[in-house]
Length: 192
Image 1 (tube, rainbow, N blue to C red):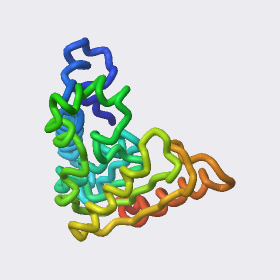
Image 2 (image 1 turned 60 degrees about the vertical axis):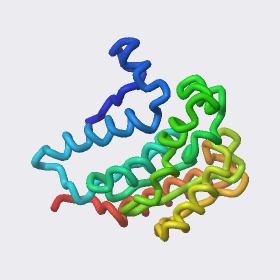
Image 3 (image 1 turned 135 degrees about the vertical axis):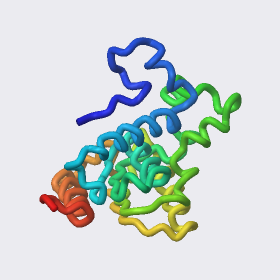
Image 4 (image 1 turned 90 degrees about the horizontal axis):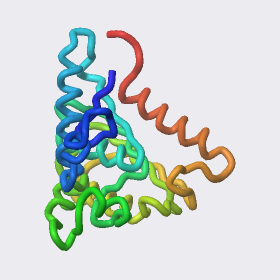
C-alpha cells in the first residue's frame, strides 16, 4: 500500500502538485500521517510495529513523523536528512518554498529540527560527512537538538561519503546491514 501526499508528481493536476508551495514539511507530513492512520485501521495491521524510513527529503519526513505523530510511528530510519530548510540548496528550496527573506516562518515550520523536542520512539540517524547535497551540518544541528532535549537515538556516520553513501569498500553492505539490524531489533518480523 502507498500514499500519494499532496505535491507528489502524480496525475492529479496542477492544483494538487502546486498545493505544497511554501508548505513543505506541513501539508505533505500531515497527508502521510493521515494516510498511515487510515491504513492502520485495517484489522490485520499491527499498530505497535509501525516504522518509517527515508533518505534526504524522505528522511526529513521520517523525522517529522516520529516527532509530530508518535502515536502512529514507533521506529524511524533517517538517512541524510534535510533537518533545517534554511540550510538546504536554494535551487530546490526556493523553487518550492519561496525566499526565506519573505517567509522565514514557513521554512522554520517546515523543518523537522523545529519539532525534535517531541520525538518519541526509536531513531537511527545516518549521514555521510562528505555529503555535498545535504551538508553534514544538518546532522550536527539535529544531534545538538536531540542531545539538548535528552532524546536517545542511534547514529551512524560515514566519513567522506557523499549523499548516496556509496564510496569506499564495503560501504553499501555495511549501510544496508546497519539499517536492517536496527529495523529487526525494533520492529521484529513475523505474525503476532
